Amino acid sequence: MDSQSAPSPQRRQFLYIILGGTAALFAGLAAWPVWRYLLPGRKADAEARVPVPRGDVSPGKAYFFNFRGQPAVILQPAPGKFVALSAVCTHLGCIVQWLPDQKEFQCPCHGGRFNPEGQVLGGPPPKPLALLPLTLEGDQLLVG
Ligand code: FES
Image 1: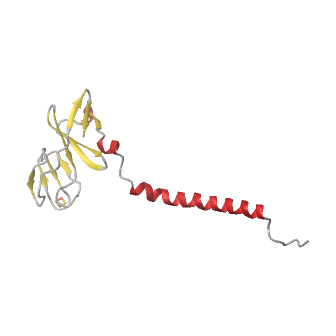
Image 2: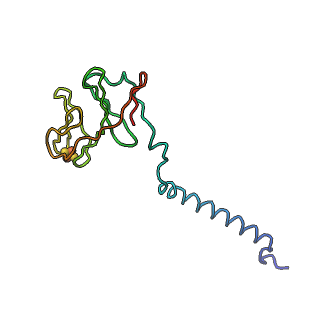
Image 3: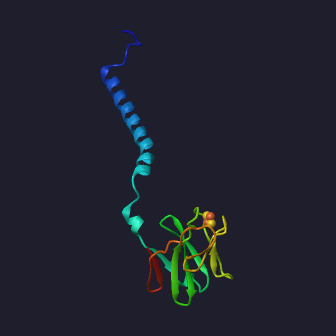
């Protein structure tokens, strides 16, 4: 009998199963990130309200935070009055900064200016900063 003869049919079948399973596993691992990327975001995340402790928003100061993946800001322009705005400039999308001495938002890119309620004061922005829904529940400000 030849010692270099072909593997037996059972051994060949076993190798095919192992190779096929391994190939399927790697194909699944490679496709998973693509699948997750193509799936729309979970609706629960998109609708979740973002809590901000009321104590973190001092009068006259701005509190910047992340709202559903976008920069946002809460302001207390007068004691007990809170405003939540998108911090994304409506001109070309730069992030606005709060200037407490001037009591206005300014965009560092092209000099757009907004008042504490997000209305355009000057510069190229074509419309106000987006106003975000805001409710107060206990010591929490809930945005969204
Ligand atoms: S991006 Fe804000 S003024 Fe141009």
